[in-house]
Image (cartoon, rainbow, N blue to C red; front, side, top):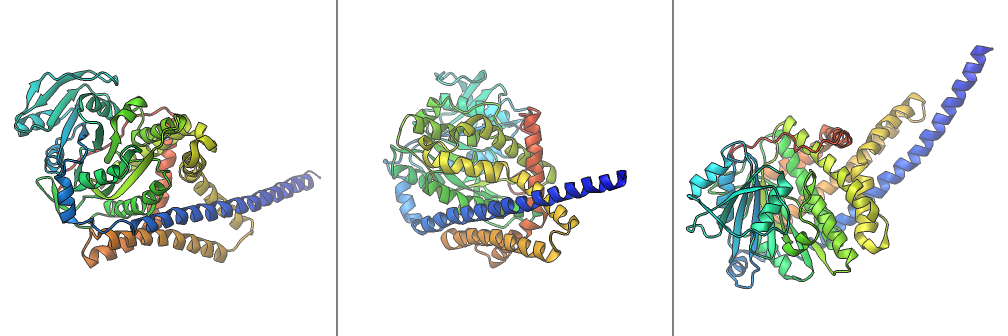
Length: 482
């Protein structure tokens, strides 16, 4: 009798499990179809907009614009912590820009290495006593260095306080109404600032921020801070990140900027109206995703105060950055990104979701980010468990699973190919046919483990958030030509 009762309970449980898995299959199908349609929707805007960008407003026209007195002056802020291997090339790159009026402010954030001394020695800088603004509170500034022979270069030495605190210190010293954030492991193309300023000048009153395009410098040849020979990365992880960046920036951010729904401007290269950044309190410390945080706050500030605005993206303003080439460093970076995304959504974004007063940003951008970015690892993990349940309960066969997987793979792979199409037809930074073939190959290899590991990294980032871990994580620099 007991055995019979146990069998009834077991059968009842299995029936309920089958019902749940059947319900989940409809939810999962709806999720996959919706995210795919949204991807293609945004990609469609990217394709449409890219054809309006003349392939070069080319070099001679950029030269004329670079020397124009109508270009707005810009303060370039470079936060630097333990950057002795890259900081000199970075500074040389910025000092060599084709731009009429700008300043470079390198902020040494209490580095433990020779970052400070290398800058002082290389540019023969001496301690000065400028008047610093106190509009944004920062850690103690120990000194400001300058050399009149390099009139537009300043070096701030401050106590360690994190990247956000360094940017705020740079804002307090800056002299111009536009600020630009540049990572110390990054290099700008000589006309990058001119191109991004051109986008700003299209509507200077309403354009509160413009993001630049970030590309991978690994395996390229760098001389005096300038990328001379562009090559596709030789190592596996930078190569995968290369196609990942291409899809994200060219296939995604162009489209989001068209609908004024851009949620992030990469910390590697972006330009902002200084008064708006100060109005929202500057960069917030303790945020591993400070680049997303500042953009969310700018959206909210303008929408709540009914200020006409736009957050734009300039795909032809190129910044070259070092990509992590080891599993340990890449995993640390992606965990930090996952942690920052979750923290921003919970503390900054969630109260704006689906509220009409926040327009496209609240009705589309934030719901998309929460459901398809923040919660994506949980849908993927639960999907894998559901497939296992379907197989164990004989609710499907391997052919159905394979067909569904291939359809999903094809839809994602076609988006990657679309981003490569934009790259080759509009920019052509990789002229060799072999590099194009490699980009296609790695676009496919993205789905053979890399994306799955990315889910694991993001989950770990969420766990770190729950443990209140706000550390920057592991990051090791190398020379640009290695």
